[in-house]
Image 1: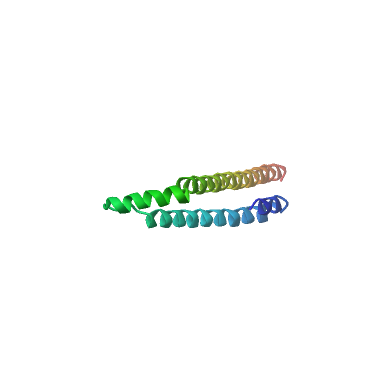
Image 2: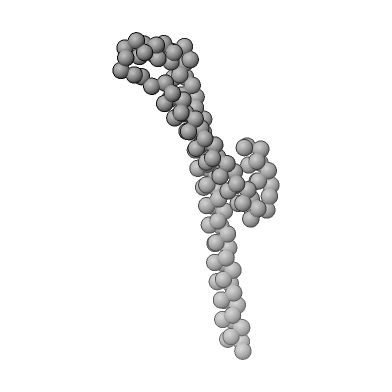
Length: 120
């Protein structure tokens, strides 16, 4: 992912935005997949009403270090979300800069047209 961002930074502005959007779609897809896998794993190890099974599940959770795994996955999801937010902000900034240049060009065109009209 980080290599893709570096490559995108070296592209022309329009292609850069397109590449950023592609990276953002990949990030959101990864986020959805990680969330789905985490939910499936958490649903696999549900505590039942039977005390014997509850003790067994608790023992398995401790042995598998389920809490550490969940925290690690949650941290990775948070990193993905942060990267998505940063890329999204970059795309918004580039888009607003592009629109500002269009407005400047239109104002300049209007001024030139007014000057030409006065001269004629």
